[in-house]
Length: 265
Ligand SMILES: [Zn+2]
Image 1 (spheres, rainbow, N blue to C red):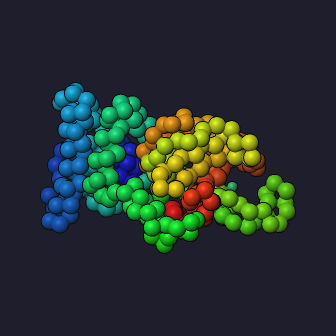
Image 2: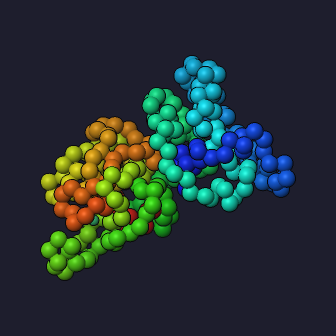
Image 3: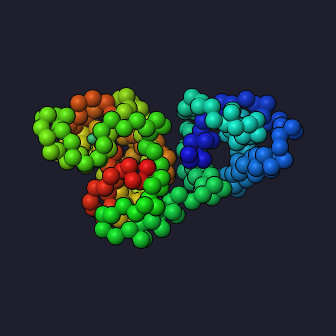
């Protein structure tokens, strides 16, 4: 799970958690919680430094619940695991000022892990289109809920009904208009109409020979040359191009060859 998502989803949680850490928590939990809690505070301070907005930035974050979000783990794992409604407002706050967005991502990932750094390492040892075992989990899920509807590889064509079609990606259930997120940081190299069935398609180059593509989109909100962060909202799913219904066709390419996305998610 990405910290980004964590922050985004916790927003609406109980304000009580911010007031004080739960005193009866086991010492180790308390320490861990405090450590987590420190992330956003540092982040708020960082934002203030970058934007020059001073305390106002911190107050704005607190007001929108960004700070609340991180305090939630102090109330226990049950609460932390509880799925929350995706909230648009905080996402907007984070992504509106460019400097703020960058700072947010960097802080969030450095406190837990460095997934894009790990990706770089994996790609430096990858040869050809072979997927290294270490690649599993190195890409973030492009959808909040991932349900595979058609695997990568040989299959019966859903369009022609014929055997032997090679499915270049993995299909996931997604009603039209579902948020689609970048699987990793990178640069958008294509955002437009794919003449060979992909419909509205976005391609992101993650560097070191790794690319991901997002297809049949109803719309996209990125342009060629744009740098995107891991987990960033880039498009809405759809059923454009050669598609029989709303879903996301997701591809992973290594040195120009498609590989099974399941080995990377
Ligand atoms: Zn597909």
